[in-house]
Length: 250
Ligand SMILES: [Zn+2]
Image (cartoon, rainbow, N blue to C red; front, top):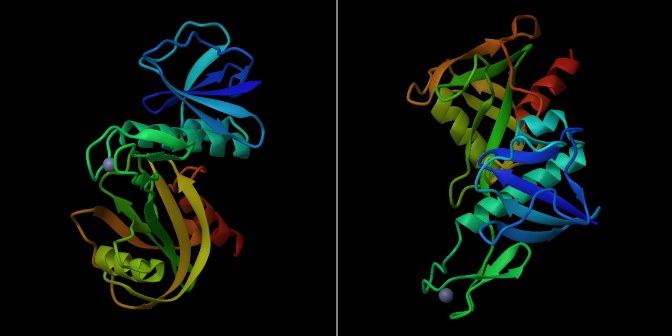
């Protein structure tokens, strides 16, 4: 029995009952132009399939946004769907050896090797930090210019080469808000397959400074109490988990 992880753009193919298709035969005919790779998961072997166009009008099947699938799938299946999407993204973006330019071949199910020069290639994770800054009964929330919808989020940003996670937390908070922080503590992490990220969550305490927003990236920001929170990020994100954790501490 095989599980079929089939993707088209940002969507995944699920059954109308909301499950990853499962069985001895694929839920749709596979053709030579489909990109297909395998992945061994704890529960069953998986085939990862890149569809050229969305599947519509086939009884028992539906296309669902990968992000929306969080609300449908179990936590394990959502994680598996994300891993499949990340591997497929990496496969599409790693056709050739960066050293000698030869076409790469799969070596393991999560790595490739150059048949000419022998160089091994692994998926590169884009690591980002996200931080909940507290000041007494308030937290720091910001609104990025590229947010869709009306919600506010937490300060976040990509880790730079040669930087520790804690240094990145301090730098991002300073760059985005001109606030100094202390007591940076690890909170938890989350794969973020949009398209290939790892979000590392922290908490921190306000130390000094007045908010001065980096207006190139942010359009709003401020301190919020539990009783005056704006819209916050959707449940699939570690941002939401960090904010809910703080709300429960009231
Ligand atoms: Zn090479």
